[in-house]
Image (tube, rainbow, N blue to C red; front, side, top):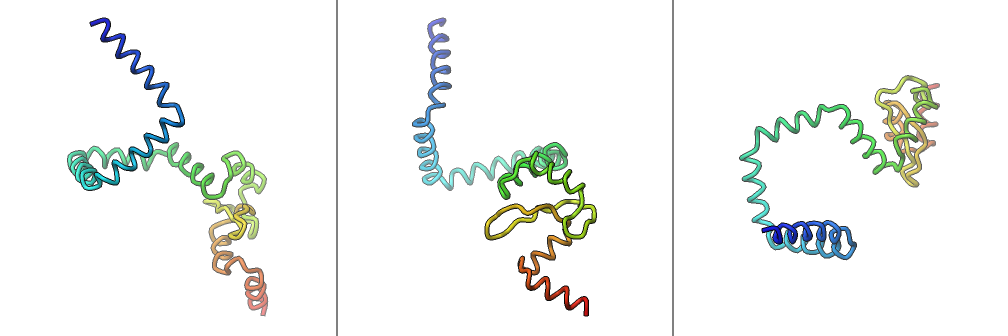
Length: 154
C-alpha cells in the first residue's frame, strides 16, 4: 500500500512539472482541439444537460458575479488593456491629470470614454460620452467638425 501511495505521489509531482513544458502544452492544445472537433455533439449535449441541472445555482452565481464591484473594476481594466493597450496606472494618471474633466467641453466625466485614433489606435485622452459620440458621428474628421462649428456660428 505504501509503495502505491509513493508511486501516486511521484506521478502527481511528475505531471505537475511535465505540464509546464512547452511541448506538452502544444500537444495538449492539439489533442483538445481534435477532441472538440470530433465530439461536438457530445460536448453540446453535456453542456445542455449540465445547464438544466444547475440552472438556479448558475443564475444566482452569475447575479452575484455581475454585481460584484471589485470584479467589475478588474474586468474594465482588462478590457481597457485589451482594447486600447493602456494599463490601470496609465488610465488613472490620465484621469488625475485631466482632473476628471473632458478634454473638449471641460465637464466632469461619468463614465470617462477613452478617445483614440481609429487609424493608429493611439490613445488621445479621456472624453465625456457626449464629446466622444460627437467625434464618432463626425467620423473623426476635423473638416466636418469645423463645418458644423461654422454652421452653428451662423
